[in-house]
Length: 281
Image 1 (cartoon, rainbow, N blue to C red):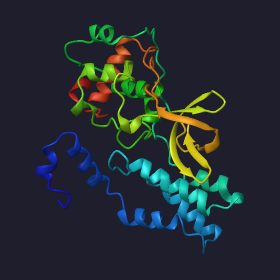
Image 2 (image 1 turned 90 degrees about the vertical axis):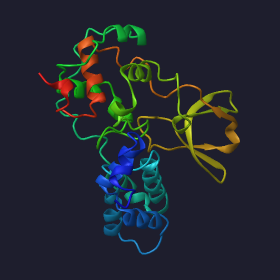
Image 3 (image 1 turned 90 degrees about the horizontal axis):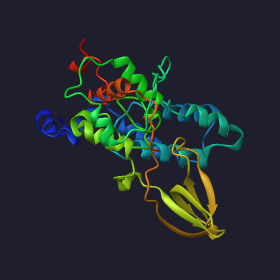
Image 4 (image 1 turned 135 degrees about the vertical axis):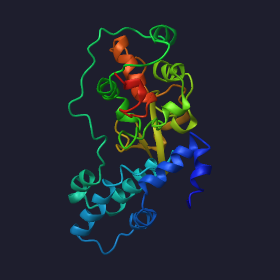
């Protein structure tokens, strides 16, 4: 109720759903505030206290917030590792503080195919007028095996590199989903763009600039490993522009046959709900 009232929240399928999920998962704001402060506290630590503190980060992966929430927690973690983790303990503390990328990949069924080079219009022609009699487990497995789960938050699972797609069914039509999957560079949100960093040696590095500190610029270049930071000397950078392409590869669904593709779309549209009518047999 303190977030605005159930009736007010329910009026908006998109932002209201996000607000409701924040209330459901109840991220502990006091703990987050303390973690934010402690990331710069360089005195008073013992190995046991450091282990306790860094283990906390791995317990926050189910917490939901706005679009920048997961990135905010990752930044607190990284700054804590930079500021208070001794070199001798760094590997241990990195492992202790790494949240699981997801929780249900074990037992996933790989695509059986045969696949094809899908276009949006071609895929739409393979869609029935109404998705029904779909296979929930196969749809979930297609979501995992096509690497969607590596970059996208879906319910309590997945990564935070790309947009949270938990509420896809409330926001997108089948055409919208197919366009986002097959033509990921057609529309790229400012929040998820990468930078094209032209180096003085003539090469170009596509990466996300995290921060500039002293003579160095820190970036992340691998969307599958957002916590992996690379250091570039400012003197090596000639110019920086916005990279026009999405970091999401095209062709991720090309290994799926039409039945598998329909199951994947049903899984996304249902919000991962096995009791959705699309899965009724």
